[in-house]
Image (cartoon, rainbow over the protein chains, first blue to last red):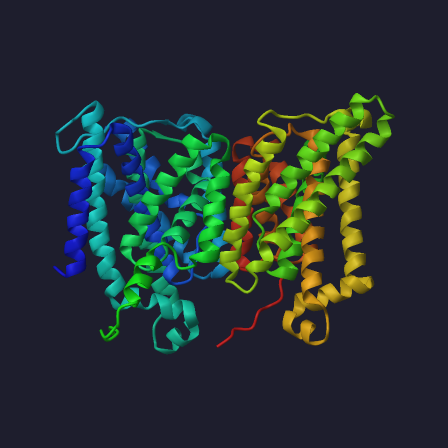
Length: 320
Length: 298
């Protein structure tokens, strides 16, 4: 467990936590959202390694967020840990149920069907007056095991809370990538019939990946709902999913760290574009996406690999 | 009885609209295997262009009848230019990449074009109601129908017939069918696939813009109209089978009638029903209603 990569990762998360103390509150909340979204991206990376690009991951993101909001409002539950687990669990169950259908599809059809599923949720939420229709509704600030901070302190506490969740997720997903189930993703993308011939059920493997990715998206949505303090149906709209896919392409599927770096870069580019070129922030994002696809098809993560490859690589390839 | 009739007429009008936006999308997918997210931008550009044309035309006090034609011509011209720029300027550099990657390229184009619209036309909304007023209404029993809706249905039907005729009975259409079936074999037989791609994409773009121009009198032309259209067109195309023109027609009819039924009987599920129908169809026909079976490649 205590490999070098994990140690470096833990140190980086600690450093991020310490750095947060010296940053202005608006930047801290931006980072909090970036890290929360990174969890969704982490889930997308799991799927993308197997060649699947869902254009409807917002379904699980929104399920997680609304679970938190509903529990906080009508369930009277305000504990961040409970809300987080509930959000992840509900999204995981939704992913498990939709997975029976989605796991049969590949490529474009997978993308479109997942899109349809998220749009169904959007359609339901928009027409539900009790849940505030298109306006959504507010989420009460959470408390942490009895500790109930306010104002800027709440922002910092949430930031550390999100970092903690991210660190755990990074550790678990890193281990998953090394496991047989995780390592089989690339063979599935290359030629899934041959994987079937090995005696492995591809459908079941993909179903599992869908549930993991959905749970991560739900956790991300739950954290986002607590941070923003508001939920609305746009969380399930296809543009939200598109944004996540965008970050995944930007990050590349190379490693766990790529999800966090990509998400941070995306939030920074977006905020920067929004502040400097208010009328052209979408254009800026589009151009960044185009350039990434054309010139950096493996994502930002590949920059590190490219750099490393210059050194003579004598380490044998891990076989599992 | 009245409700049933209203559902039928509303459904047909909505289906006409859906078919017009979906046909270009399915054509581009059938020939080029590109799921074009930027199709929503074509629609938006067409609508804005038509609204602008209506402004120019009617301000001069020219004869009423020509305005509609001018709007359509303007939208088609915009579609032509836009399609040409996108295909030659961006898309040809990504042919051969993964289908899903090309979807993302068109998504990037969509994001860029959203801001281009703001740049050209500004954030305010436009109205081009004149053709709708000019067309007037017709009363059938207790039901008041807009002549414009009837025109819309007629044009969509004409478009469907024209597409059928063009694909089956013209030289270009037969070449297109060959490319749809097998691109490599078509190229081996001497069909210039590059030209076919460019022309197809331009036609698809013009159809998208035409859809926008036809809808402009019925809606307020404002920011974000392309965002909604693109998912609707996706749903129609997925129901009918991607790349199939007759599929787009049947898909548009199914989705249109179902939505109209929902609007009249249970307005709460109006948005939900479109995607529920799509999911339901895909459960039983995973690749839509009108698709050929694909062989598994080992």
